[in-house]
Image (tube, rainbow, N blue to C red; front, side, top):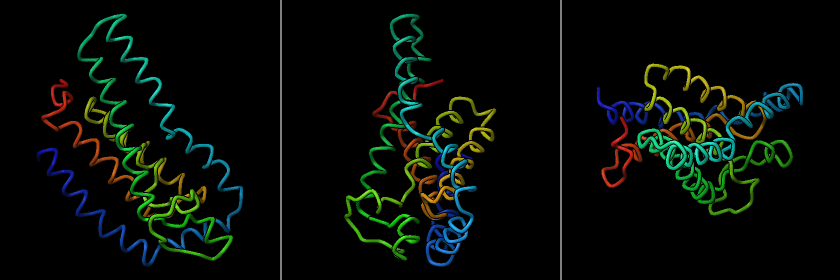
Length: 203
């Protein structure tokens, strides 16, 4: 099965789940997570920091500098650059999508009993869809799976754990993290296979 065919199956599987989750699951799961209090949210909020982009962007730049000029290795330099570019590209793109949808975060459900979309909203309280942390996590997982396919399951377990942490820490709904997983994966595969970019030459 080709890479894009696998992505297509992922899209066909997750897109309906995103819609079903928004309509029938999101608010119930969020209310349950909020009802558990800080005992649940605090540790998962801390855990989700492992998906913050700067923790990955800075090391990838440093590795690129190292393999580009200090100890030249073109293939590894390209891999480090691919990691940086994928995280930066998916992160910037998902923030644009967040503004367009303007979905209220679960905290708005708790504080004001508001659930839904407001469209073209710049407020961080309305930046729930898709999940940025989950986008980053699945971008990282996909980059590593493409570079080291033998260990793909461990990389995606990291992505799944980050996605769950965003739901349990009240920052996102299940549909948000599913959309983020889809967004990060598709964006990364596009970068990797785009003939106008050098990353398709990675061995």
